[in-house]
Image (cartoon, rainbow, N blue to C red):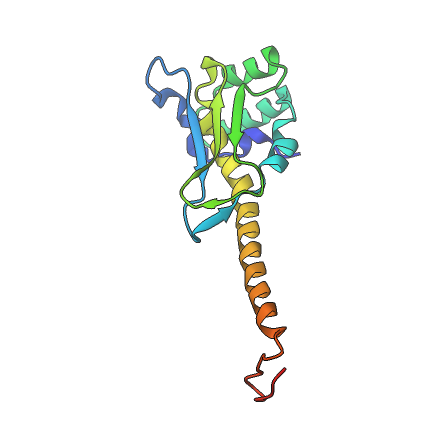
Length: 173
């Protein structure tokens, strides 16, 4: 099983001490930034089911601590231990999103993640990488597939006409 604690950019481990003193709640979001005028939102439910419904375990924390510290990054063991020991491995976060399959203009928030416990203000930004990765690829495939379906539908409409013309042969179809 993939360890959620290792599914982030390595620099995210150093973010905790960079937050201003007194920070309690942070909200991170993802959006389709371009490539098309609109995007099909897809992939969040699979990510939640595969990763966020699996409780964080001591073994996951141990593995992440070993890997992260071996790369010279700080690891916030205390926070992860609180999640394991006090919260039963459940992450103190709330995720809000547009419904899966929503077609929407690019440059609009599709998902927002916020911590629900002020001790974990660092968690939304930490999880943003995995969340973005989980949604970007399936949303891209869904968007491209929708565009292809629209082109095919137009071509079918043209060629089903009795007046359709085959440019190569010069014959009517």
